[in-house]
Length: 345
Image (cartoon, rainbow, N blue to C red; front, side):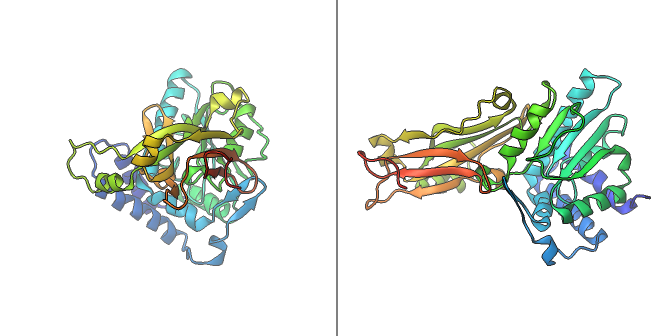
């Protein structure tokens, strides 16, 4: 099928801005919004239609509705850093295996495969091949239409409508596994179970993106946090939180060693911490690839999860945490209300 020239021109502009080091935030916002709008107009989409607002519920979490997957484009810093991370990974693979294309398995493409689509304007099919996996049938239909609209079928090695938590790999020669099936604090979506299923099926020198996702227990001073949020002095540093401990992390190494930490752990707070801070939060940090990192509040994926505000009537002396999988994956948190007894049930 012949590609749509207008769509391709907009995509070229998206790629130029994402890989530029000089553009302004407002410029990136405008071009990503235009990209999303061009796709919706081209497909004649009404994102309020019921079929685009149905989540898919799996044994191991939830796959978001087509509408919300499409909206991810407008999470600007997320989109920019993921796409840049994937390009750096492709460059690394091509440098290592000259003359052979880099193969990406991209899980959770949504309707537009936004985290790899700009790369089709940078690389040729002889340099880049894609295995695409999407479980939402409406998103999958739009994904195939998007591929044809851009005329990039030569980049597509395989395209599967499948549950990646159960998927069995046909070809283990994948160089890069890209999975973005997650929300704030690794809740609800099956990121953990997907990588736990796929990484052992692929080769040992696989590049996993994100390389590492870490959930940390933090104590926050909300008054100082407000000062931080309104601080316009770039040289003024406002400390408003203290990281207590890493409570969960997922990366290729822990999967290959079969050492993902699903056991509960307890952290108690000392008197000074109880005086200085008044909120418990879970912070998320993602090392996507090399120096491409998403950290505190830079994206919808790294907004702090505020667990509890301390009160004089119901003090909190610590927490017990445990990452759980299943149909509602999340970091399970129980508050310790007294010095003598265990966590709340």
